[in-house]
Image 1 (tube, rainbow, N blue to C red):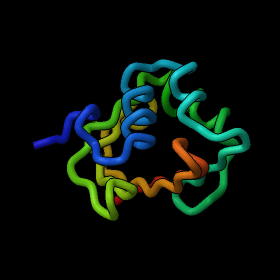
Image 2 (spheres, rainbow, N blue to C red):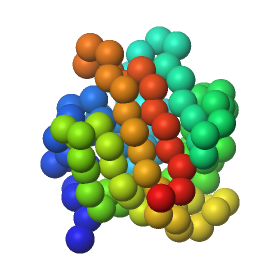
Image 3 (cartoon, one colour):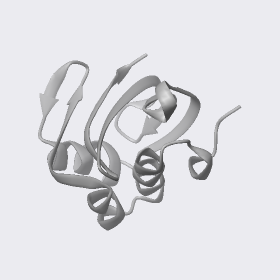
Length: 107
């Protein structure tokens, strides 16, 4: 049973997941602080290049299974046209009302 994106606890995480699932580049950018960073499987990546490859040009989609740490940690089934579906973990750092960093990887 997945948690709908609009019911996620943290508003900044909710905005980012909603943007990912809508493939909305502008909403994705708006949900991030200037200079936001990310890592994938423990390696820092260029956030914009990663998002274009793994989300926007590959039809990325998150089905959130669970959340913890006041909504800053998610476990989700993530799928895209490159890798198919995989169980992933996501950890978010919030600055003000936006995401300043997220870390993802296989769960």
